[in-house]
Length: 273
Image (cartoon, rainbow, N blue to C red; front, side, top):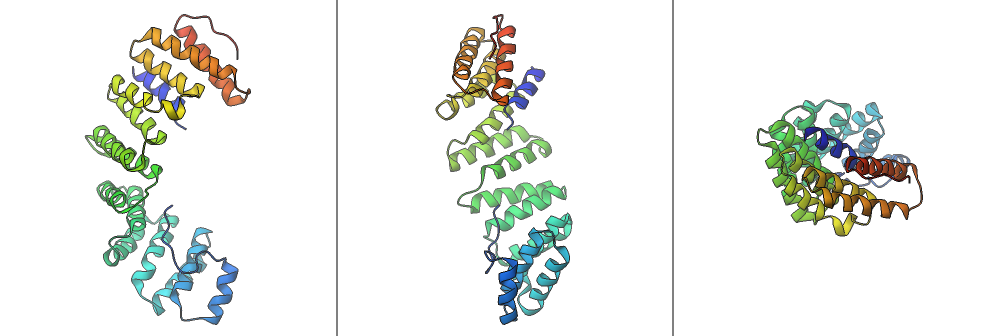
């Protein structure tokens, strides 16, 4: 069972940024504006953010430090948190993020950054709590953040799989039926040996993915795990029929080879794609 689940996992595995005044401008444009307006710290923060994103660390730190001296430190704290996160100094990043949250406790981007930094710093309780706050505050969280939080729960929580599934279902409820989230949830169902629930989750994606050979291949694998051999044969045949209607590509060639392997596993004569 474990080998089959791992094979299935391999088969289907496929920024929220705090805005500052002027961060849509280029560094050259900000250079000109700053020369004409030396007392606006938000412009320095914006340029420092651009330097930080492009790895120009000394210039970034200079602008952000200067902004601190002529403005309010907490208004620079988020970007300093980003700066130290990018440098890999996660504990220092957390100090700045916490200072920012102390003044702006309802900014989703700050909690997302804290979750990421705390994960890297191996402060998993803070990371998980920060993800939860981010999801509650954000009107449109990204599916990838739910996946990151679910994986964190699975790796650090004694009841990780159940907690991760509950989180993924909350994400699906908020975002709608999302293939990324449902795929991972399906794999977690298999990890807790609940093939029936895994199948139910995969069938729920039929309207979105059912026209692809890949969906049929995964369905066939799940049906084999559920000992539904006759249904698995039908799923493999349907996947093969869909594949033959598509233009040949390296990826589809690999899918064809998988279908041939499944047909042999099911006792049928494979055909070439």
